[in-house]
Length: 131
Image (cartoon, rainbow, N blue to C red; front, side, top):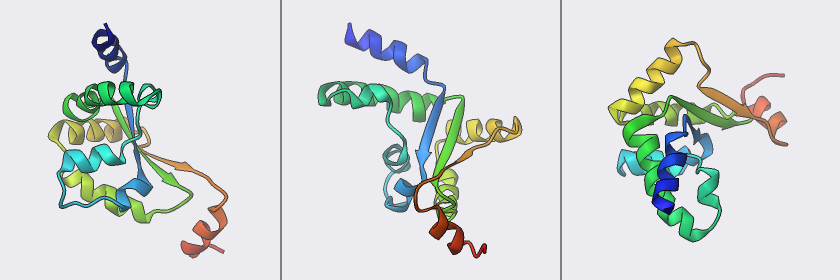
């Protein structure tokens, strides 16, 4: 019964967020699937409890990375554009289905980068050299 629910939930996942700050701690030498998965935001269902996370994460992983979702988004805190380089490195080694979906998102002129502003916005702007 739970597996049927997990599949139904996964079928409704249309978007996956990649957390920019998690890319910096990853290593390109590790498996691309692992690198991408570790940087990806987890589905709210995975945050319910340890058992559901253990059971649902493989289903979510398959949907987000193997079959692909409609849209991928890179989430950056403040204006920390250094993580864009990490994302570009990751894109080069992503599975083809993910690369194709990213290309489709760009072709539709949909934004693939989202800035999440925190209390560190001013230092972030100063690092860019903006006065």
